[in-house]
Image (cartoon, rainbow, N blue to C red):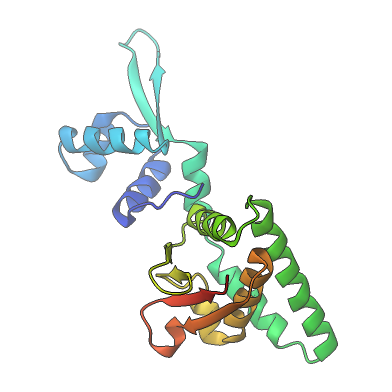
Length: 206
């Protein structure tokens, strides 16, 4: 599951990673804040499994605790493929041979469908819609289901592909097709961030 890290915590983790194994005092000296504030932040990040504490015994001195990033935290800090994805999408869209371009887009759609389908169980549209929501939330997307109306709505409160969509709106159509195949039901994109709305909404036919 992808962890949503507060921007201030993310920057703190970057500095701690650069600093290396550090005591509370080391971090206090670096951050220029009180030990109490550092301990509170470290404790919270330990609970999120982003920071680990190790007992260090060196020479004749008293043992001390050193704090470092966990492997998960290192992965989280490096898990940013937006630039690469944007470049790849731009290059695909610029392929002049229509057949080749469409074949690549079809493979992308098939791979995305297979990925989400593998994470979803259940046979009813309600179960699969809930599973899709959870799968997207695990990737860090702000997604919810609104079933107050006649038809359920899958709402993305932040566009997962904002930069890509601004380059080529067809990414929205691809996402719509993926959701339709994953859910096995007709999907209609009724609101889109690109059109000035504050969220993207997909209406799902039961």
